[in-house]
Image (cartoon, rainbow, N blue to C red; front, top):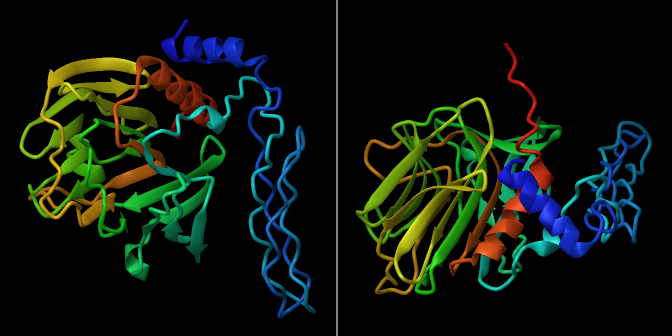
Length: 318
């Protein structure tokens, strides 16, 4: 039995039978309006207990109205077989949480805002039309993902991310298709200044803090992976792939900058010399300003596996 499946079964045993009131199904998208100047439909309502959220309502004018907004996820509906709720995510120290099936603001198929679900309002945004990644509503196992072209597309956070003195834990569900050197997430005050890097380099997964870094695990450009790092207060850091520890090294924790903040904070972009923009797809990012316990790591791994079906991905097209 795989480690990910064991984690899911263990979690189900602890919380009750899987598929019973764990995750609400998302509301269906709104129907197109029947009129030419129709307004966008309203979001779907949240589901109660075992029902999913309603779909968005249709536009309201005479012909060709715009489509309804995406319905909100229900608030406690059935998850189906094997479901593990996002409610299991530890909340203490949760700094940023981006998921491609929540909080997407897009225009013409390109993402303007990826809303932070942590409650900290650290949204990832892009004001330039040419810099916005594409939104693929069913790009990963029938679920949403953001696609970055490797040319100029990225998202940026506001300043912050200054204090990781209690450790750092990060998770990314991503499929890098050009893994030479690119950041999934980079936080810094300039190239090689107070930097924290989670991404890929030389065909491997990489975690870097200031100058020290380590690489391990071969990147598969045809499959999504759950890449994570758990950097403990004592200075040891685990690099993990799909719930398994690949390697452990000693690295200093990210320093608290003199200004107290980091100002160059990106999804899909790095300020390192000779690093490209990220090329590929990203479906989820979760960042903590502390290290997680082994039990907490298993909970997040189980959630990501259940949510994205990482071990049961569609075969790549020939």
